[in-house]
Length: 481
Image (cartoon, rainbow, N blue to C red; front, top):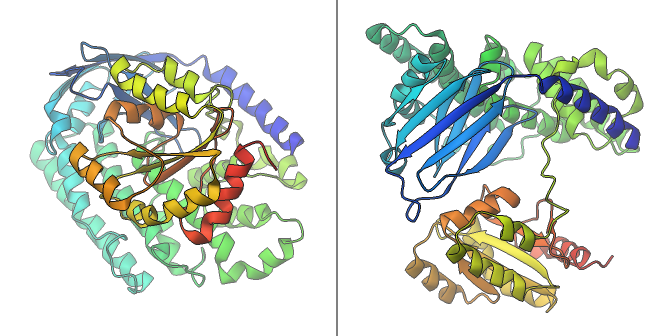
């Protein structure tokens, strides 16, 4: 394991040295109509990438602006994420760009009110203009979440590809009517449409069911070969990245459960490592860019790489495809109280949280983030008092409500009668947990150990059959074995 890690770390270090020679792109963002006491004070800048995504939180100044400097080696999509809306831009190395947005853009669905100045000004202005229209087209298509799960895979595939073709035709009509010829915009917009369909096709065979009969060699997955990126720009877009991540996940699922691979899985049980099986599936199913990116992902996330595969790493993965991992250096080295103390929240929002954790000093803290509209959250709440009793007095339970008005939150807390501490988070307070707890889905559960450090890793849902797992994690966080 140490040899594997050292080998790959050396490659990361080499690439990092090369990448530092890229030219920074500088972006100035002005949110017009921004009021620091009313609006959320934090935004994210995202650079999509399958194996090394960049997502950084930025504090918005009291004047409503942000200054962002990004080290990039080629023209690519950069995304501003603020208050549940994402705005796509294109930046180039050395770019000196400005984005001015009206706060109305984030307060209602529909048109993006803003202007952009930079190397890709024409393309970005087209993106700002037409992004809502393209999103509306995509949202009207069939999707795996609501489709009838008993529909044969082949039938679903044909329907979804036909819908994609219809939307692409509608886009071509729009392009002809508006006389649009900017190739960056055309690539970006067509990719939005194509990879929304491709991502959905990846989801359908496994949506709401354990599907052991399907595997990577059945005709259904022939659609993969229709979606190879047309150029390097497309291969770095968020729409493509989302699709490929879902495809990689599906191929992993197939390796874990497909009947086709049962004998090979059984033969690997003694080693406890299915890496050779996954390598075989990825390398035979995918070609070109997908193959390189997916194999890189496999290597980077493998707990243990068998020596023959480690020795031949460079034969399968060009050095340029191995990415430096993004790590949160502070997590695991700094207490949550210290992180919170240094986080740029206003005192009125920071102090109540500081008091919560000061009162919990020396205890393990179990967090639950929930809201009324979250069905899985609500299914868990009735089980908490039983878990709290089993966990004992050395564990503090903190329940953070989100996305609720104070009245409905208070009524829910009373209705469910859950013990522990309860607090309704503002959007700015949530930003702290988004940064350090990777809070991006609900319900979310997180543990602080007895020293006040964030314990990494996912926890299961709070249901009686999962209590043993949760209680073991809590015992470990106390410093016991």
